[in-house]
Length: 409
Ligand SMILES: *Cc1c(COP(=O)(O)O)cnc(C)c1O
Image 1 (cartoon, protein in one colour):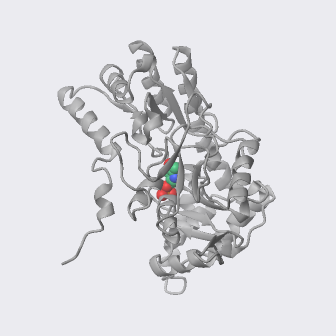
Image 2 (cartoon, helix red, strand yellow):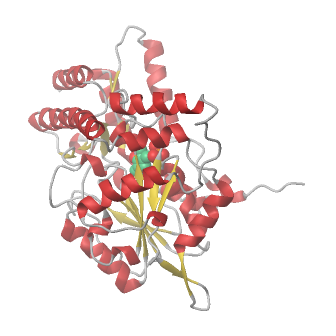
Image 3 (cartoon, rainbow, N blue to C red):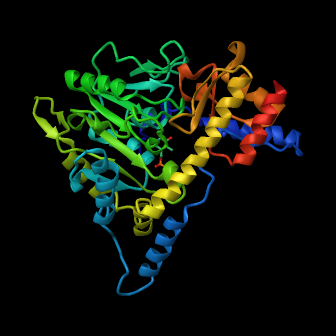
C-alpha cells in the first residue's frame, strides 16, 4: 500500500485563480454580451521581441542539422548564457560572481519552490504578508509550514505584515528565524525596497545567521536608482542570500521558460553538530539529480535579451507596461482610491473603499465595470481590504478598463 504524503492534504483545495475564473465565468454566463477586461492577470501579453525570435530561429536551425545538433546540455546551463548573465546582470553593477555560482533553470517558480529541499524540515521560516503563494505552499508540502488555520495563517510560518501602517515595508522579525523569503520589487504589492531598507535585512541575516531567499523576478521593472537590482549590491549579502531571476516578466518568457538562480559559494548552512556546509555544491547535486537543463532554444533566447538590440527591445516592452502602470495609478488616485506600487513594479495594490472586503470589491469591479482584479486576501491575511491590478494588459484595454472604473465611481 502506498501512503500519501499527508502534508499535501493540508494545502487548501482551491487555488485563488481557479476561484476567480469560476466567478468570472459565472458572470459571463449570465451576461454573455459583456466585454470583460482582465487587470488580474499575472501574465505578460506582448510578444517576444524580434532579437529573441531571431535567436530562436537560429537555434532551431542548429538543432535541425547533424553537425550542430545539441542533445542534453549541462544541468547548470550553457556557459554562453551564464557568461552573459555574469557580465550584464552583475559585473555591470559591480558584482563579481563565478560562473559556477549561476544555475540556469526553466523558471523562478521551479527554483523558489524547490530550493527548500536543501533545508531540514524544522527550520523556522518567515514570509512577508501578502506573499507569492509558492514560497509557503512548497514548504507546506514537506511539513515545514505546519497547518493552515481558519484565519488563513499557517501555524509554523512567521508572517511579516506589509500594511498601510508600515508603508508596506516589512519590519524585521522580532524573534530569530532561520529562513526569510523576500520578493522585491514585490508581487503582489508592487512596492520596492530601497538600498538602505535591504541593507537592514542583510545585516539581520548576518547577525542572526539567517538565510535570505531573494526573489528578483521583477528586477527589470525598477525605475529608481536607490532600489537595488540584486541583493548582492549589498555588502555581506553573498554570505547569506540566494537570488532567483526569471526572464518571464522582463522578456515575455512565461510560455518559453527560462530563469536562473545564484548560489554564492560563501553561503553556508549548519549541520546539527554545528559543522558549516556550503549550499552551492548541494544545489548542484540536487539539480544534477532532478533537472536535465533548460532547453537550448530557450537559453539562446535568453542570451539574445542581452544583445544591444535585445536590450533595447525588451526595455521598450517594459516601458510599455510601466506606462500602463502609471495610467492605472493616476486614474485610480484621481477618483480617490489609495494605491501603492506601479512605480518599480508592474503591480498596483489598491485599497478597497470604506473597508469593503477584497472579494466584495472584486465583485463590484466585475459586476459594474466588467473588470477583473485579484482579491488581495488571496495572497495572505494582510491582503484583506486590497485588490491587485496588473499593468500587463494592452494599452487600449487598460485605458478602457480605467474609463469604466471611473464611470462606476
Ligand atoms: C511570475 C513570478 C515568478 C516567475 O516565475 P517563472 O517560473 O520564472 O515564470 C517568480 N516569482 C514571482 C514572485 C512571480 O510573480
